[in-house]
Image (cartoon, rainbow, N blue to C red; front, side, top):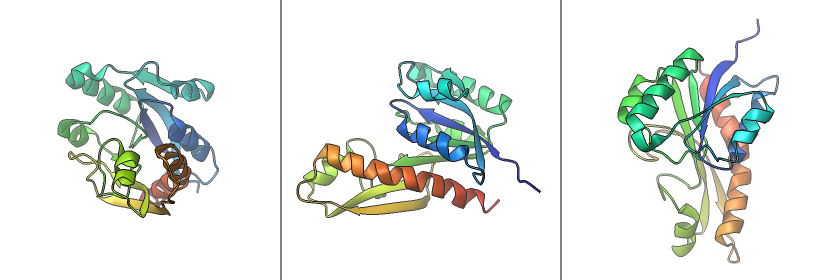
Length: 190
């Protein structure tokens, strides 16, 4: 018996390269997800083009009034039977209320080895502190910034000549590998 793929929504704010990667992953025969919806808080986000090119429903919500935006988002998630939300460069913090009301799992990818370097400008802070290693983390979302239970991490060595850009590129490559692995890991337990 073929297991039904889990209805998934991806939330983005920018270029959407992790979204594109998740679309490719979702098209694989053994992928446990089907991406039904893209939600963005930025109507100019480059990543929206991936939704259009792949016939994925897209919605933009202005999070200036986050209560209203979250209510609208919850309604559309419910209508589309979404059970998994993947945050992929979504630059808004979801409220405790939203997290509680969503009847499913919410996961995020972050470009550092959490719990170190939560929040923004991670690569700059990592380099400023002369860290030997950095990496990326996929974690469950809770009401505290980048503090949910860790699902998977990938560690990379920082070279002396690394810059913010080179570190970002190296870590992004690893993000593309571990996000699908983390999804498979949490959904294989169901």
